[in-house]
Image 1 (cartoon, rainbow, N blue to C red):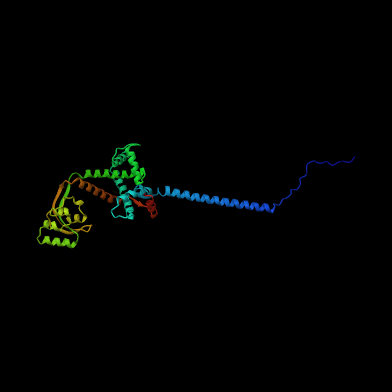
Image 2 (cartoon, one colour; image 1 turned 30 degrees about the vertical axis):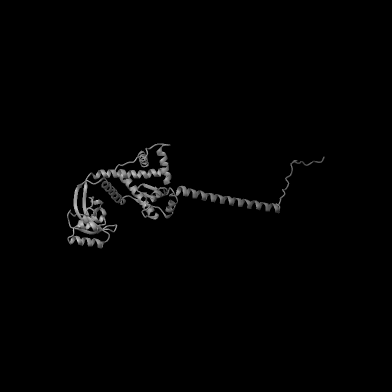
Length: 337
């Protein structure tokens, strides 16, 4: 009997057919790739544009405004604070003939002086509390301090709006005013009630030629008081034969201070002396009183003078660094009103 071959009954693997994509299908894939590339490029461009817009917004609203443009010791001033102070400062110089560029530089000096005064005051143990700042604001507004809905709240909001200034920046400004006020009070206490005062007889002229002519007339024998009545340009003193009101020497013009320094009352004629404003003085010391009582105005002027001297002295010891640029100035101008 013939033997039959056994089989596994499993299907034999058939060779796979290799399909070649049609030419049309290849073209369609290329078009899709191109569309995706265009879409991807457009998306990337949109992201870049949005990023640039976002950066510009951040730059103009956060990075630039919060940039430190001035540092005095440990106290820093941002560009936004400078811009907030610029508008009222320029307003205060209206009518003085100061142009915008000069006012911008003067404001920087003003901020420096405020920071120096703050430092001097703190070194003397002077402090300013938030409550005192609020009380001072209320005093300037002419109403008692109060909360929401009060006259203080209404007037203060109007004040901030008129100055285009934030609450924090306005309070910082008032705080600086209080530090100076308290420092001045402390200096007034140190000055006491009496000080040296001098009484001068003067003839004030516009030109050196006029001053020398006046001097020659007096030296030739004419009475100085009589000459002052007609030759002096100072209407107040000429009505009193050239006698000026008693004044602390420190409050006299620097050129006059130098001329009378160490000179006793009743000494010879002094001058002609030229002042910084261009006037010429011929003068004589009529009286020196070492223990005279100055007026309240003179006391205030002496205290202000002492503060100016302290600022000048401390400028040499306190680190002051300006980092403001022309671009910063332009930003401040654009955002000052």
